[in-house]
Image 1 (cartoon, rainbow, N blue to C red):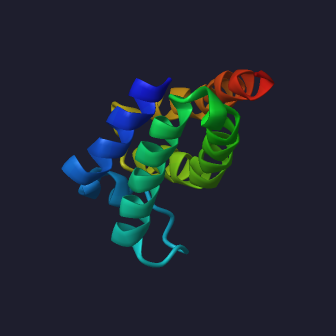
Image 2: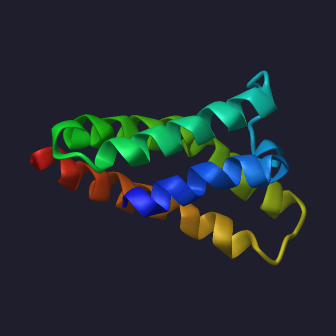
Length: 110
């Protein structure tokens, strides 16, 4: 799990434009929010490693996954409006978010 969130967090800095495109329009400071969420993913990934901070990290990841869910919805809306052939990816990401939350929740049981 740690490697997944570390890679995802780093990718926010490698390709921030991808994340900016799926930010809901009602949120301000898209680029800054992309960087903040990337930093959070990196920090939370590192906090998963030591046993002493693992439970905290898992709860923080759950909170982050809930916080970024509107971006996943926005991505699906954008792909639908553009008749994107990748709409299926955006649709699959929605329930996948629940699986990721469940996976993180397993780490809260230490």
